[in-house]
Image (cartoon, rainbow, N blue to C red; front, top):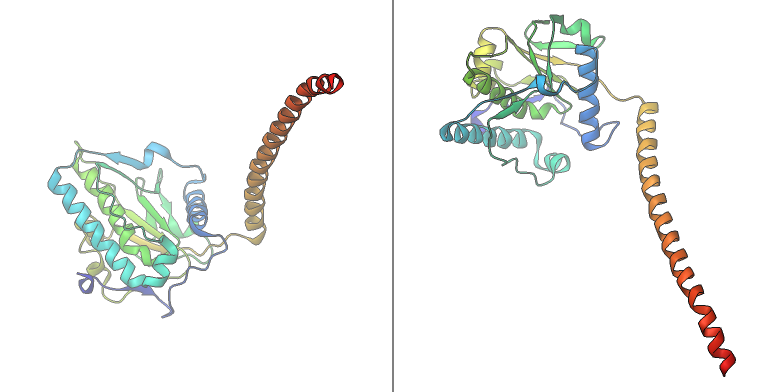
Length: 266
């Protein structure tokens, strides 16, 4: 139940907030691209490199879905109902479990995460060394900690089912906005996620904070691009309307001589 999960909260003791320089999903996408570029040198999606699949038994599917429901329940409780609804609406995340899983980033070489993330970044758990093959999840919202843990757990579960096993050497969660803390020990926070807990016990689960907000000029440019897309759609609608009016006018003009002849007969 919810009370069994340690609370994840802002380290400064403040409340969670959805304030951002970009609205909604755009903010999350921008942050993910930003972190991907810092860690890999490119903001491009890694595609199949970050995806794995395996056949899941019905029992394991139920187990994963139950775990996800618990993670959602606790993330929702820790976030607060009002903010949760502003962030996600009425999404209940009850989408079932398939044999596919993905992470945001897979490290293709050894890196020092703090050197990559730059000024303002800090490790909240674990050391900064990332071995090749480390899997990374990114979120702008600290209260999504347990949901991100679930995504890592499912990915690790599917990797462990493969022959031979392809379990990554380490996992990293990068968060934005505010540094987080666990009201209990971090090991208690991940004990619901057996594969992730194993990594944590080995010292191979890391949490990093990396502050980032889109510069106002970038924000303005994104809004301009959005307005241009809308304007192009409006222009197409206007053009279609004009063409329809022209067609209607042409049809009327075609009938005018007949009307004129009938008039002279009168």
